[in-house]
Amino acid sequence: MLNEERYGAIRILHVLDDFSVKNTGVSKTVSQIAGWQAKHFGWVGVHTVNENEVFRPDGVVINVSKKRFLFGRWNYPLTGLKGLMKICRLQKITHVHVHEFWRAGFIISAIATHLLKLPLILSAHGSTSPWALSHQGWLKHLKKQIYWKGFAHFFLHQNVHLHAITELEANHFELFFKKRAKLIIPNSLLPLNIKIANVKAFDSKKYFLFLGRLHPVKGVDIAIKAFSASVISSDWELLIAGPKEVSNYYSRLKKLTNLSSKKSRIKFLGPVYGEEKKKLVSSAWVVLVPSYSEVLAMVNLEAAQLKTPTITSKETGLNCWDKYGGVLIDLNAKALKTAIEDAANWSNNDRVERGIKISKYVVKQFNLEKIGWQWANYLVKVQKK
Image 1 (cartoon, rainbow, N blue to C red):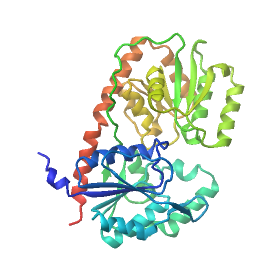
Image 2 (spheres, helix red, strand yellow):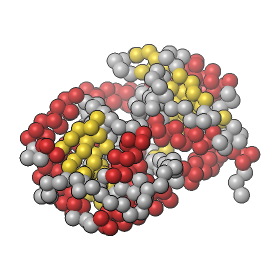
Image 3 (spheres, rainbow, N blue to C red):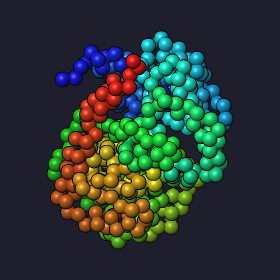
């Protein structure tokens, strides 16, 4: 039987730069687990420097600091190290969980926890993957090398506990940090308060959907190339939903589209949220997730939760996806083209059965309650004596 009194002694502060509602990656993940923790722990807070509208899960105390800029876009809390230590002392924090590595939040968290002799949990959220380290231009690569070799490695003291979201990320940590993550806990999903019919009729105009940031790491160009080269009937469309994040890359995507023989069937929808997003995903034939690097591509899980199968690359942290109704491919346009053609030939029953199967797997494996107790048990284990 779980000892609620023991978990109630936990007082945890999450630290991250961007906790805005439009940042549906790390922020949403933190919001979900923090909201669960607030129901079971003595105190849960989030310290952020983001000045936009932020997530506000029930029971979680949000501390928003104004930001200053040190080096270009490198954010630093205006309250600085003293402000973070003040929160820790005032709220009698027992754990600090930082959700960034390449930003100032990690440095001030590492210093504060070292001085206060508190355990620090570090979640890098895919930022130490080979792609993240070497495919963002020479200048960023140089800055990261200076940051890491110049001073950041000094802050990985004995109180720092590396948290990997998947085995894939644990391998990345071992390559980069030369230190194995002892803690591997996946991201979680909030249960949806909606009912999706097990059998549904699809419109004559069916579509494949890409959903996510229009960023080079997401492989949107691969999706366009694969769809353009595919041999499928003229009633299929490719819908691309997500915010423009890199202007040059978006221009490249538009150019690829204009050169495509299927350009009239490739549509850019812009960002979608809330019920509009759920409807778009649940009505898609398949969601395409051809990312170059994802520690755990949440769009796969969110689509599966809505009983929509996905075609995803092996770089998205889901190495058994094809066993549960999804499709797992090598990351190239030829492999995605073949997968698109195969999926277009599924019957309605094939599509529905895959959706049901992948939904059951995801709801069981990434259940918020299950993940929450994994975190609770670990935090008790490393709690300050």
